[in-house]
Length: 76
Image 1: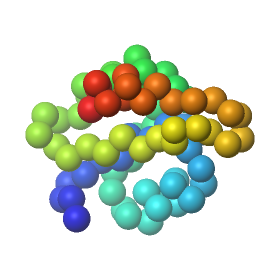
Image 2: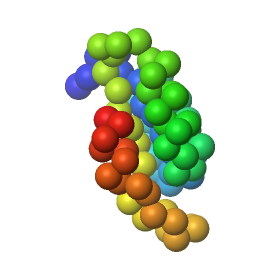
Image 3: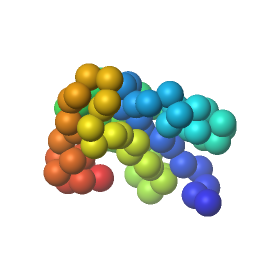
Image 4: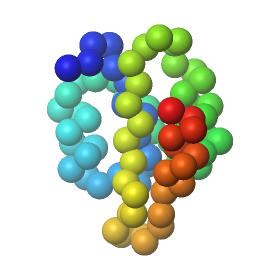
């Protein structure tokens, strides 16, 4: 388990992911759907050295949109 973790979650994540993060009692930030600039700004706002987990879906079933996985990995 990660200590002092913050989840950075796409706003369109499935309810099961959102509930899991909520139930973990860890800090959570939400970035605008597929907005890599917003994600980057959220990441920059978190204290250096703090554990961070970016939570997203590769394909969002409700909208059919696809995550920019390469860019998310670059930001991570």
